[in-house]
Image (cartoon, rainbow, N blue to C red; front, side, top):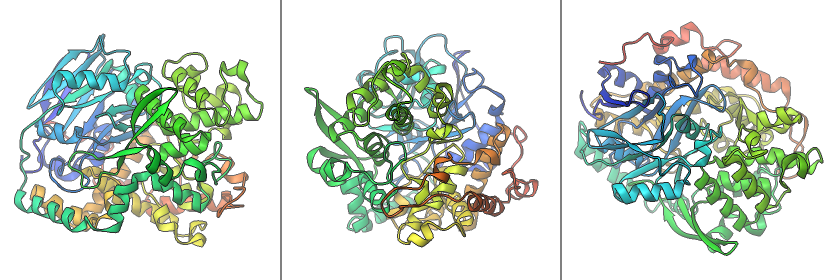
Length: 612
């Protein structure tokens, strides 16, 4: 194989207890690159749409990219791919830390995990070697303790990625927790680990990555870092991280409050704004390995007489747990820490508890129904609920299924569950941003905010923010660009603050691999990834009928703020959806056409030779 890769995927069969390295043809890497494009291809090739996510035949793919291991800004990310237990469709989930760097430095471009162990195990990976170790004494422990024990065994420079009780108990939105402060949070990849009795992965490595023109690649990375350091956007991101996003959503009137019944938070000015949190709790900056923009925040706080440290809060946790559940700052931080330790996605967890709390507030449920109190602002009650979810105790067993299933089983109005395709949406009210309304509806893994980020195009013009025209083409183009980034794998935030966009990353990819990567070819890689993930979803039964938002957004106007009175118009929303399908080259039911698949060189699955 040439440059940028070791061409080694570690395949682990937990049923057979076998471990082997496999290789792919060079043409495969050229066409699919890595990350999202390769991951979505492998889901098709291994025909995971045929298997229940909990079946031993299901795979979890953990992939890095061709720029991983360099000093290119934003490359410290690892992505997991599988069939989602939460939605039954396509799943990718990404985390930071040093996991990606260590895996690449161990001599691997990814890990493929299948089978099911009879007893708890963890996977230890070092330079060109791997073995399974007993996790019997780790099973049942929280994420922080588990990582601490593994680092004491394997060294502080080892990267650790583990699950907590939520993953062990198959909570459908359980996370994988990496290097103490990072999570593969969305879609339930932690539950897939739990189903396989895989407590975690430990990775160490020290093998140089072979790049085509390493001096120029590293020189360009250092130049970008040096020249961008004084930039105000970079300095602002380092100072506040994602905490400042709540300023934007509050200003635009699209913050999440009481299960999406309001778009303006009364707690924002009290103690849920960036300056209050920065002044009272943040004690240090945190970053992924070798990242020049340490946007993570390490906070220290006291709760009920005990001092805790946590990574965060990030915006989505501030939104879906903080303003959504209306808890105080200290309670927000404790619930953040608790979810991290238990291994619970704060987005799906916060929205699911918001659904239950709304029903409680409306008198549709009471303490006897739930076995606990879920009043807005009751941090202790929500903490009790999160523990019940992680251990599937009482009503927690149903809440662990997600908001859609919870609403169905309890007999609530289905629109109380704020989700798309079974995955809860993130912290932007779509009544105040038609771009996000479309993006949430069509996102391949469910109600996801990371596929396109259209609010950046809409935030300075309210008329455009509320309009429907041109949004299909805009979302399609943004998705393709970001899918290219996610194939490298690049952090979402770097292109928004660095002079690094598709053209520049394509040039860096050429320096790493020796391949000529034009702008058009780079965008086509992203388009190929998006069509492959949609094709996988089609095989899982997903169609236009599933590309829809809860009815609340169509019939309940926002009550105040800059989006006051806004509501989605059903006919115009459907036209916007048709515009998106047309821009994608899909039919009116949202199925990629044969002509589009042929144009992108996409086979239906299991047709192309994959192992060399």
